[in-house]
Image (tube, rainbow, N blue to C red; front, side, top):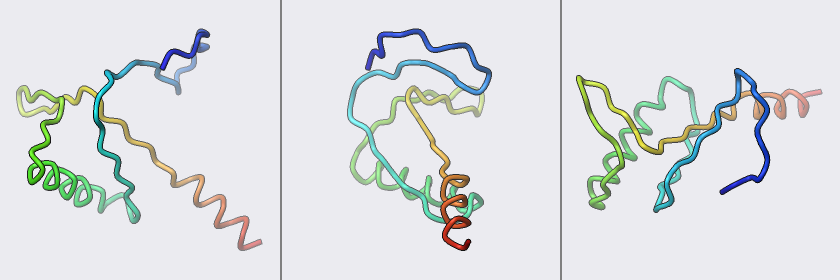
Length: 85
């Protein structure tokens, strides 16, 4: 979605576009170390539903065309800490 303004340069912000299409959304609850299992479950679901991801494998490296991950750990931790006060 075009935003109509330039995004200021910032080493912590990466701006790009992903193609339109159908997307799968997944929320992982649990430790980061278990994220691999959650991703495996998503990949199994995709196989069972004949979903073809936009990705390429080259030299044992997988490159995704539109994979986006968000980590909410700090936000949730802050909320939990504020409730404890």
